[in-house]
Length: 341
Image (cartoon, rainbow, N blue to C red; front, side, top):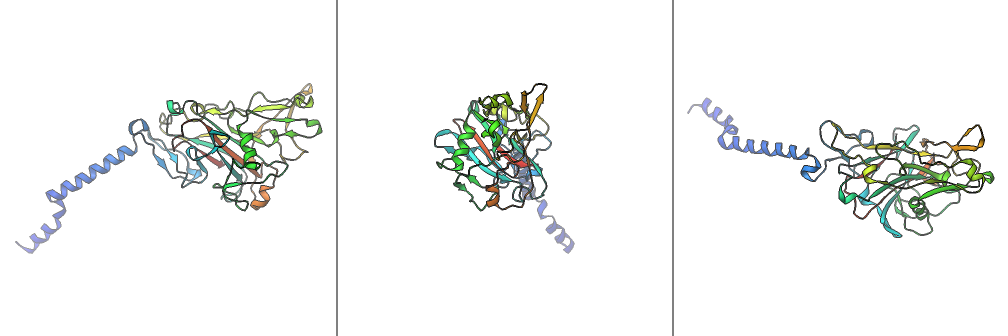
């Protein structure tokens, strides 16, 4: 055999019968893996979960679903990882401090507080019937209350911080109680605002749904009811999973989360006695005045956590409460992403 023939034989080894069979087997296995990754949940019992930054948290083309990974994006709260309330174990909760600092918004600039809810599961499935979701915000109380932390501390303020909702006599327990009540109220505005309505902002709850994300609580309280010392009350009821999440995340050519914008009836200086609710009055003035809701704008700040934890304005610092109620823990891909956008 000539030298030229030996070189050709050496170069041709990968094209031997065994080599061709091995290459074909690897190619087939990879193709099957790709197919399995992009099959819908109904076919595989799984979901495609990707690690995305908040600004890129959208789905893509094709009949597939995407849900961000909380391990890679700390602004994402998986509903299966919340803390059960000792007073009501069927309700689980996360209480998260949010401020427009670099920890929450590295790009800077004033932003609107929103909640995105993600799901690659069918929220109408039998296992989730009866489960409900609430996402809301609360400014700090006028009278300071001690804080007990599950994660984080008084010297940190970021997406991974969590108040303990079960520590009696602390702010966490106060917010847990407010967030599981059926309503929030204000009273005696003629002498200065009382109650907690001036602290409250809503995202997911009441009569909102994935089909009507911008609906404000109804009925709104009137100025007259508070003048009569009867108080004015706004419902804080939860929303069933089937309504809160996208009813069929696999239906469209692309999938995206359902986005809920935080709204409030408070004006600037939420916690102070001198400011209360923006009013819109008709011909009869006080007798037909209603609070006017507005988006919650988070003002960019470089203040320290210690300063922000003492701030009474929900535009500087706000506690976001994520709570679900049910008997079966939600799948891992059901999650809430807190976004300043």
